[in-house]
Image (cartoon, rainbow, N blue to C red; front, side, top):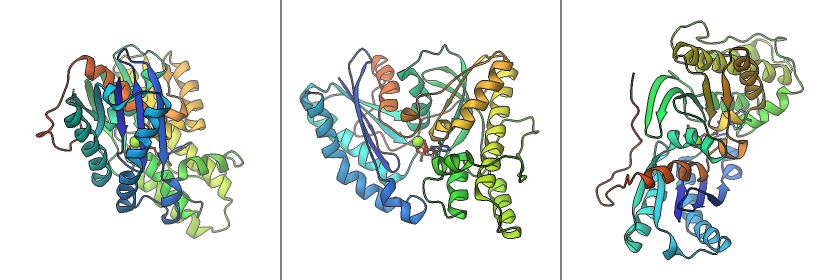
Length: 330
Ligand SMILES: Nc1ncnc2c1ncn2[C@@H]1O[C@H](COP(=O)(O)OP(=O)(O)OP(=O)(O)O)[C@@H](O)[C@H]1O
Ligand SMILES: [Mg+2]
């Protein structure tokens, strides 16, 4: 059995896998309600809550699965990127278990795990193009193998999820912004108001979303009477158009007809629809994890952890520091 742990931000996730890669069960504790009054995540609160929640959540998982702690043969844990305090809770807990039971520790990169979440439900052939679009990151990768991630482009400022969250804050809608904006956008019409599509004509694969956020602020200042649902619809469409165009042009440029879209924002309905429509016109297949596996969870950590376990990519318990994984360049 493999125990997978995710504590990179404000979600505590634990998952159990059989050695042959079957997900037995995963549990998730979300701190959203704790951070909501602040309109964003407060790192100190997040790490203290991780510390409180991780041990009993692990106990519950083992009990639910009728598995004893000593039956766990390896532990996979998110090493980074993320909030340092939150990460340290998961990494220290995992290391302690590995010391106690003399079992191997597997280091998992959070962004790579978001992408490999797709393998929990589907098989996608390597190589493929991946768009990772989450709260803290927006990047396009060429993925050649479980351990070969080539970074093609990334955001120069805000991540797409961060833009959703900050625009929701500007509109006084609450946190996290993505699902709230998406719901409101269903009642509005894109195009009634105009927002820019940053870098859409740029031939590179970088993104920029901070200007879009400022454009929303300026629009609100100029016309406080705008209908929030129309603003949300236009904002959502602007983000979706940029993400889809850049990702599909990366696929075309590299002549790869498989795309995976992962991370919290990949749960967005409008984005999923636009991707499916535009990709099918170009003969590209586009896969998304179920919304449950788009936002942070430990099942995705195990999806990659199982493969690294099979390949015996163990880390030294005393020497391995907190660190993100490495990305290659073409
Ligand atoms: N339906 C949705 N539409 C748009 N955005 C969404 C939706 N659901 C969630 N999000 C956004 O996804 C983000 C959270 O995703 P995720 O949990 O992957 O990010 P994170 O772990 O905080 O960041 P990172 O993975 O970059 O470290 C938030 O910004 C949230 O607003
Ligand atoms: Mg994440």
